Image (cartoon, rainbow, N blue to C red; front, side):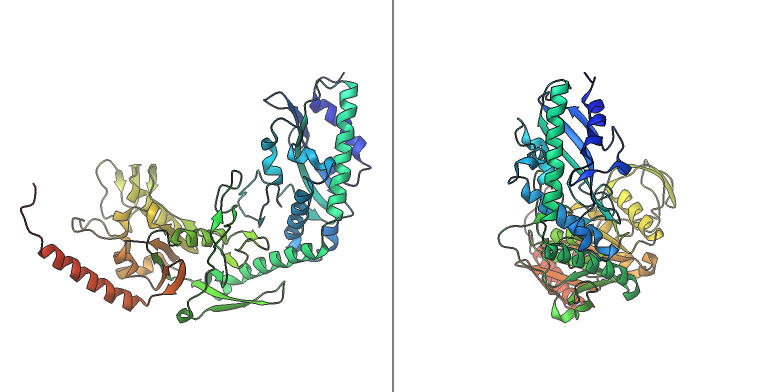
Length: 464
């Protein structure tokens, strides 16, 4: 009897070579991407196996290498739909085991075609393990079988037959994917890649196509806005306000064109609105534009240059941090100089450092949400000392300090910062409208006069 199931798998894999999806021998690393182990619950045999489909529909339907990840996405999503229908595919979803939820990530729908930073690694999607090349479709299959006991000869025979059936079923399922579905995904991927490549020459940081649907529905597995699927039910699309003169791009892959809202180099863009109007949703949509999305995701028309930096209030140690753009002197407890600060950073110090660092890196844009920002770094207060220069004053008096970097932020109450923006997008009933900066400033002046009058009318003796 073989001592372990991992050792047994080494003997089983060569017997799978005649299957319609055979073992991907050139990419197998035993113990890493090829394993067979007993689960912690002791009642499952979990496996991972790299496969290669040489006669691949996705390969045939993808003549352009820029769309290969789109073809892989279409193939994987189709295979997932077949798991509940084809008994031989049951192990992918852990069907027949006591804890099939352990395999939920293997069959969870995914609308992410490509991401530059490894988001959603638990999901079965195009990535470094699931890809297309001249040899065919490479896929990494994970799953679970009911634990058959120690790897005796009969048990190994049973597992080998189930894996053979699984490999054949994977090949059959891939062969049944619609070429039209593959082609649509391929062209969608090409559209996004080519458009993102054109943004720098157009001086654009991010582009949001008209009709984009940015709201998300998170699940147990897709629990981050970057990988979450589209919201169900009422979903209000984004359209560029006509007064901002929408940008237009031709789609290299699909051959159509897109119009929408473009944020340009050096612009300060404020997204404003009342509570729960969708300000953060737009911020998330812009950040998600570094990824390529599948048809039906709702964000296929959102493309953002990679390298934008999101900043926020934080609390971590500073080691030679430059905060001199905002601080003329350091608060007590922080050592060094504003050019090189050391010590425990407050929320505003950390955010100041992240902003200066992003500008030094020549990031295409700095992006933040008022909800997670240090408010005392954004706008002045009546008690603020001259040693601190808030961002609103930097925009007003020292804009060149930001260089070519754009500034994009969501705000609900930082009116003094919004007043310094070049472009103001207001959300009302979840729809976008543009407010001319001069109009906003006039409205703010009226509001401040009303507040001052209200303060002057206060009666009674204040508590001390």
